[in-house]
Image (cartoon, rainbow, N blue to C red; front, side, top):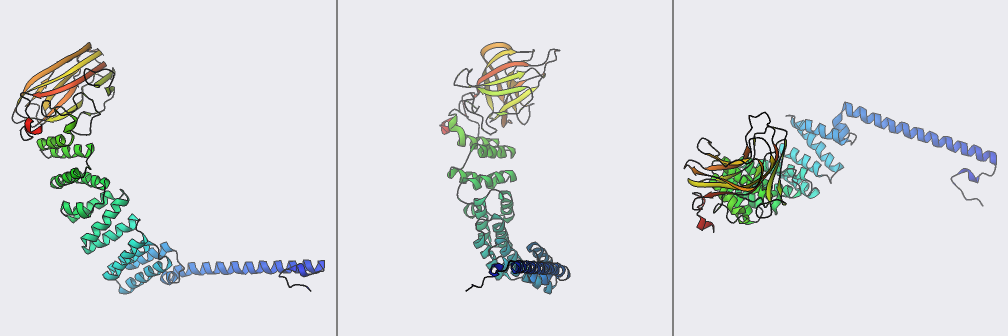
Length: 440
């Protein structure tokens, strides 16, 4: 007894077998053709429906999601209640199509808020947080929603969460904080996540906005938590100098970094005088401005004392007017001495290298120079004494070389500098910064 099989193998006659297989193959091709025509017809019908009635096409799930979003946004902008209702319907349909998407929940929440349905919108943005707890783009939309409602606590909570996820939105979020005009303590307590990164970034933002009061509060807060670094301290000091308060700037830098040089602003007003450390990014440490034909570096092979010196090598390419290595320091009225050890090797031309000190606000009030060295000389101490007037608040100490008027004028050779000192008579601290006894 033969078992009924869905193929032509049951046919015993070879001729009938071939005919049956041919018929089955033709029927299969016919069905495939019909299915293809039907599919093409459906696609063509969907395209036609999208053209004739896009709302109906989207309602029947026959339009792409991007088209549905565009259509819904356009309808939402309309002033007609019917169009806004259609927009809400489209957004709800998109949610049904993709209920796990935080983006679609945010779209519906914005639409409901525009329609005045605040409680329903809140539920949507609650779903945004559930669907995308690690998606900063949609969390930012949720934060914006609460910001529009004036709900500060939830706004700060979400912005703090975003700051913990990525630094990409720091500038945007901090600009919102500026617009919200909240006390610094509120931002610190509610708007920043735990850890140093976001807090340091916010402090940098506050410095850029030149908000002196907020910067002062943030500085203390960061110091209490050990979140400060050289760049932040230097930037804050520069802000205070720019605001006309160099003595406060010096106090800030002293409190932050003074333990690196125990004699700083006591016996010596120069920070890092022997170049024992790489300069910090602070106006009260050494700063180099790059210039062609000059190589400047710290040298641990040739030094007068300690373990390092400063080495400047001139390539002999320019009759250079060199003034590209300096440091700022606070001033007080009285007599000072500027000195340093200098060593030269084949330093050409009749204009050598020297140090000078001047009033940052007016060189007419004060400028004093040491003797310059050239040729080849072993370590020699150069110095100059000068009087600082009461009107001077900020000094600059600078390594310099002036251009020569000679025909052979291209400067070549090497100079080493070590143990730079700016010593006040009696080793007193500048007025307003604190006495030497207090600093000890």
